[in-house]
Length: 263
Ligand code: NDP
Image 1 (cartoon, protein in one colour):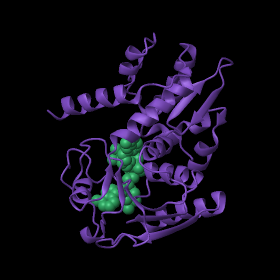
Image 2: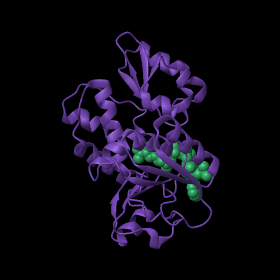
Image 3: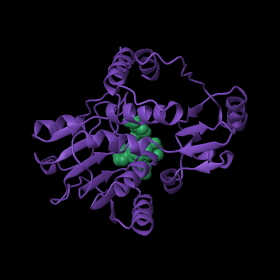
């Protein structure tokens, strides 16, 4: 996906995947600086562990408490960003302005926390976080209320959840539906998936989750998880290279990669 953007825009750069063990993270970061890298992305389990190794944090990364994109400055200072939630909001903006929306967000892990913070910063009117572990949902709701001043609440997820009647957007930010458990369905009341809702999923593989299929069958507008992944990578390219890449090119490459992986 990233190298497709480099090829399309004739950028002479490489995006190299490195499998770094937790105990080697500090050495890997020092190595990236020593080798003159522009920066790097981080995946689980490094998104929080990297924090003590950084010099600066972008505002939302500080609120989220996790980093997925580091920029190595010319002065070798390391700045941490969190572009997961920003990628989600950028994808959302292709359908609707997040300002004033009332969002029901399923999940309270890292992806949910990033999305909740960015939705709040983008002016969402209300965010309800629904999670099996209610304490994790309440921690995010408290962060949104106390640090961003948004109307945020938490609900314990016990049995099928009926999406609130005044909600305008519903988001699956759990891992339910991720391959190889592609047929797993989110525990929601199917009748509450109204046709006037925008229903979103973070799962990129497979992009058409059971949750989105059911929502579409009931006439709702849907947004799949590929667009969040494409947009966070596109934002990263802006931070590293000042590039505003063609997202359609990246989306095509991602879709091809997902197809290859599944077969
Ligand atoms: P975490 O492990 O931090 O959180 C997982 C969340 O899913 C928790 O809230 C957990 O609930 C919930 N969950 C897991 N299984 C179930 C279930 N059977 N029923 C209800 N809730 C469940 O993971 P992340 O937040 O980092 O990632 C979540 C998903 O987001 C992943 O599948 C990942 O692929 C995707 N993702 C997509 C991105 C994109 O760009 N498209 C970017 C980042 C992540 P509980 O707390 O109660 O255990």
